[in-house]
Amino acid sequence: GAASSAASNAARTKTHPCFTCGACSSAARLHLPIAPRCNLSCNYCLRKYDCPNESRPGVTTAVLTPEQALERFLQVKRDMPNLTVVGIAGPGDSLANPEATFRTLELIRREDPEITFCMSTNGLALPEFVEDMRRVGVSHATVTINAVDPAIGAQIYRYAEYWGGRYTGETAAALLLANQMAGLRALTRAGIVCKVNTVMLKGINDAHIPRVVETVRDLGAELTNIMQLIPVKGSVFENLPLVSNKELMNLRKSCEPTLRQMYHCKQCRADAVGLLGDDRSIDYRPPAAT
Ligand code: CLF
Ligand code: SF4
Image 1 (cartoon, helix red, strand yellow):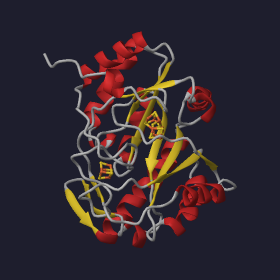
Image 2 (tube, helix red, strand yellow):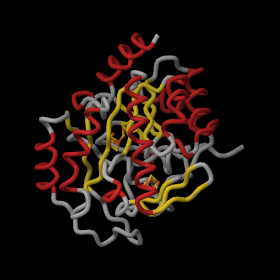
Image 3 (cartoon, helix red, strand yellow):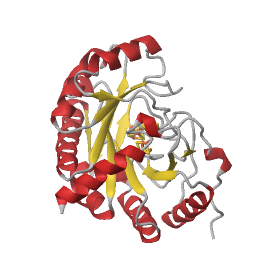
């Protein structure tokens, strides 16, 4: 039932290196890069690189098929006894590639009933897929929410693609926000432990972020991860002034009384492997296609 899965999901938080800072020096995560497409256009993104919502920008990750992803999982699991989490974090959006995302997780679940499943998404397609996430056993999710006001969101997103339509401006931002909020609420009601990532954008959403944190707390999120923008050359925000470490830390500290904050994010690659601070993704090559 929902109550017992909520309890076991919460227990998994202790060995999740992103959701529990104390686990990050011992517990490893594996990102499987099976999700190339995206349904959103964020102004800090260039699609030829990994999704900066949950990844290091400027890096191009080779995409795996679900079968190749299963192979990589089995290989990494053999090599890494401290592997606790399998994550889907791009290189596009997990839920803009639902067939590949859920097929990959189903294949792995057949081989391993225990490993923790984590997914990150921009949230645009979330309301449609919460039930699938629950069904395949996703216990942890990250939704990137940069604004809870469509007037601010309109400065961050160029367009959103939804059910065959392309939306721009405040219409796109309002659609995205409605789906993020309904999706986050449905996830937490289903007992899935949620983190919200927010990219701090100087002069755009920095003063607004405390409201984002309050809103997602009220929707049941466990923590927020306020992240620095790493500017991508060629993106709309390539020349946005940088946020200093001090400004980032001050904002996190001021939000801490509202909701638990993440301080140890490494802005991983979409194919990251190992401990958060010890990225070994380059050691692992995709198996040759057969
Ligand atoms: Fe991966 Fe993200 Fe899951 Fe962690 S990463 S999908 S929650 S298993 Fe972690 Fe990496 Fe920061 Fe993400 S350090 S970028 S917060
Ligand atoms: Fe880029 Fe990620 Fe935004 Fe999609 S959700 S446009 S991949 S930053």
